[in-house]
Length: 156
View 1 (tube, rainbow, N blue to C red):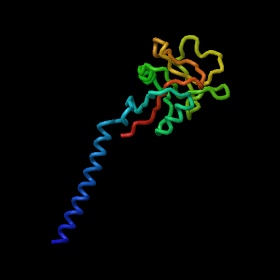
View 2: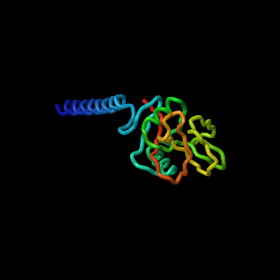
View 3: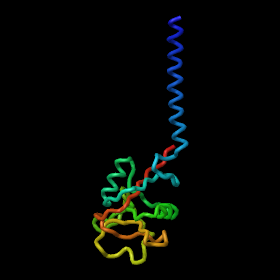
């Protein structure tokens, strides 16, 4: 009788573990991105509620397993502009050359009228002063605090 009870308890423990694992997997599929993150295309995005410098935002993103947003399409540009905040994006000027974070190929396409200017600014923001989301990139000194957007791949 004792052996049967132990076997039943082991079976119950196994089923409970399996149930909990399935619940976790189900929650993952119900919510494609973590709380506070937005799903768009093949990525999840986090928009800060606090401001930081260009480098400070990048550090915060990396602490969350992400990086500054890299604009890869017209649709993504419109999506990020839609947050209605001046935000840093993941491009910077290093030794006079513009690069995306971790990628050397940079094809600037969404500059505001009069940008890029010849100032010595090193970071780029998506500015809400532009009414056209496809013409909203603006140079800005990296030390000026702005909101920031993190991006990481969506993995189901």
